[in-house]
Image 1 (cartoon, rainbow, N blue to C red):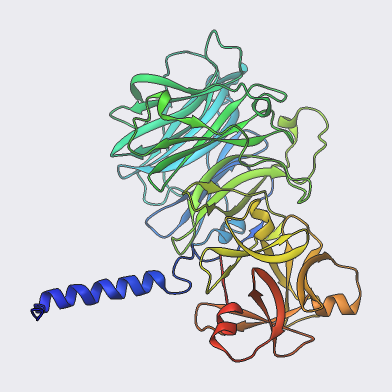
Image 2 (cartoon, rainbow, N blue to C red):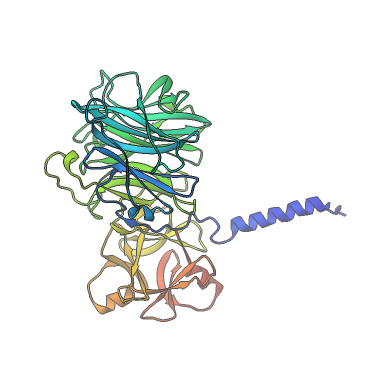
Length: 482
């Protein structure tokens, strides 16, 4: 006869069963909720940096096309930055250092003070670009005074820019781009440990990467604009490559969070760009990114600039129309980031994740809609929720990588097809957004022209079928927006 369990053991078993039930329940394995922003966030603002502070504000700075000042704005939401009042916190010198080419400011809060890192040339030698730091002890950096802390000294007095900083395992590091004597490139990436203050480095400087691949050397041999995202036991370091026209793109270095970031061998370079021009979405030359986090704290947000056209007259640096944009970072099952493609202007897209088959998303494949995990390319599973083609009160789902194509039903099968302007297509591609048939936290999409028929998955494909009232149907017809 088995001995009775002690009360503490019973409690432990019960707790374990609850946890297991939660982990195994439908929908539990889904990633972070959808976020909704409208692009572009800011016109004529390049090299954007958004910092979320503990005071409840997002702080936004970027390069102004006149290259003569540092601007700053703040808002309680990312979208709010679009209309937030902009303040000039510093202007270039009229002579000498910091007198030209005021580029790529970043704002950080370190040890109770605000710091802005930026690059600048001399008034009498505009291409003598070096890195500089401003400091403010004011609670509100838009209204506080700023002290110039001078130039960041590196091992070589050469072209250097795009300083950023991060901490890993309690140690603060500086990352930057620089032209190293003896290497025939415009700039490489470097890292060093920071000293006793946030405008000095100490110890060895490590060269992390040199642009050698075809996509890193179009127009110019460039690795610049580093930014670090820490997730899933790894450090992900994005950087920008090639000329600042439509060739501009993002590369990626990856290191284990437990490795020494000062060892070049700790970092592995991805062989292909991870974010690049998309003619389909009319987004050209995406790059010089930073990362922030969504208002609910559950999604990483990619912040970057690009242009809405490919062809540029003259030097791209003289073209003022790089604009700030944002979109959600998705995460693959192996813990690596998937940036997808630069999404179309307007509302950012979402993914329809299955409620009862966690980790699987609605995607198009040869224009047929189906359910699949680990979707590649990511954009096949991204849709913009727009006002329904049938009019107010309805929604339609527009493909991200095929703008003008919509999810519609035909012979009860779900397809992604180009809008043909007919009233039949408009109705087939319009749905009523309902509270999910499976309950709170889910959505269900009811056909406009077939009342009682819902978008659902069955046998790995997506259909529009009549609700039969079963729990199976309710689960199949419920989705979580990611």
